[in-house]
Image (cartoon, rainbow, N blue to C red; front, side, top):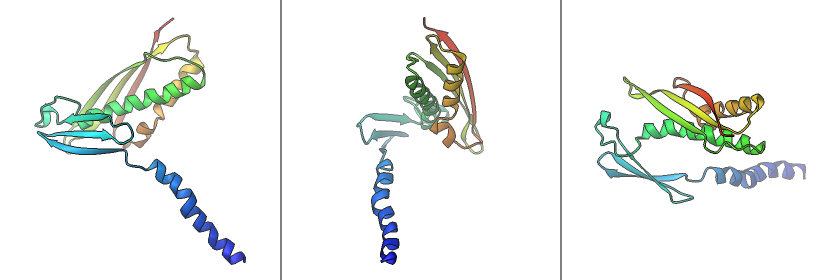
Length: 163
């Protein structure tokens, strides 16, 4: 009987735990090449659409974000989102926080070499401890931790008094 119970544990892991993992690994988006060095990405859950264009310095028209623009912008957006979660946990309001994002390209191979983010946080009486928590949260967002360590992330924080 012990043998049956022992063999049952892998079954439980394979069939009960993995659906949880699969739920988090569902298709995120569908991307279609639409011509003229442009793509259209549809978010699977919401149906929202993002279009991209190759940038003018790489034979594109530059009508919308380029894929590398989205990479740099995703970093700032992720940082803000994680900061907002920490702020919400402490009943703080950082609505109106802004980031200026600069993407610096390198050649040979063509890639994003550096992302510079100037984060201006809406300050409605943040203590130094709150500021430290928010900054650490931003720097440890999932996108920041997922990027290659060779991609330089230069992030500065400033505070705009909203009182």
